[in-house]
Amino acid sequence: MSNKDNGATRLPSYKANRINEPRHPRRVLSSHDYGRLEITAFEEIDMLNPMRQWIAHLLSVAQILPSDEMPEDVITLGTTVRYRIDGDVQQRRLLTLGHQQVPNGQYVSVLTPVGLALIGRKPGETVEAEVFDGRKLRIEISALENQPEAEARARMTQGRTDDGPEAA
Image (cartoon, rainbow, N blue to C red; front, side):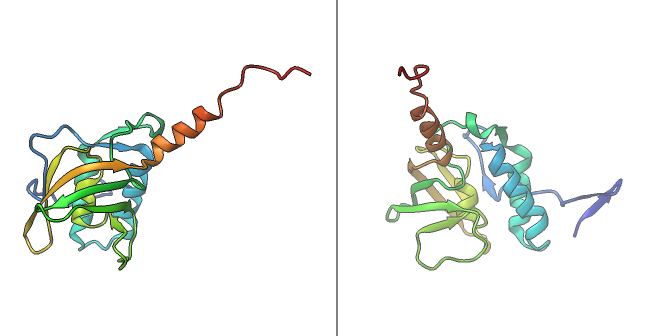
């Protein structure tokens, strides 16, 4: 159900208790991730899916940075992250925009409450995510590996060893 205003479609208001953000700085998204999430939320996810509202809320409050300015300690799409849920065993997952469930356990989709709680966060943070049945999960982020933006910057700087034209 949406509200119409001057021809624009708006989502109903978001309840702030879905993904709690107290004691945490504003989340940071790369412009690339923002665009991919925006397309997914407004063109690909069913109107009745609660993830649509949760993603819309994140997009409305996040700080957006150009991808080449993304700090290397922020979780982005394509980042491998280590975390614990409710103090259980540490998990290592690749954050994806996957639309289908991947049964092998190597990925966590940003289209799930856990994945959405991870994006834009940093190691050392503990966040809370509410799942569809109302339970709240406590997620402790312990490490970040292989952030795509940091790897791209590293590749670019490795290729910049040009000291001028090569002598004959």
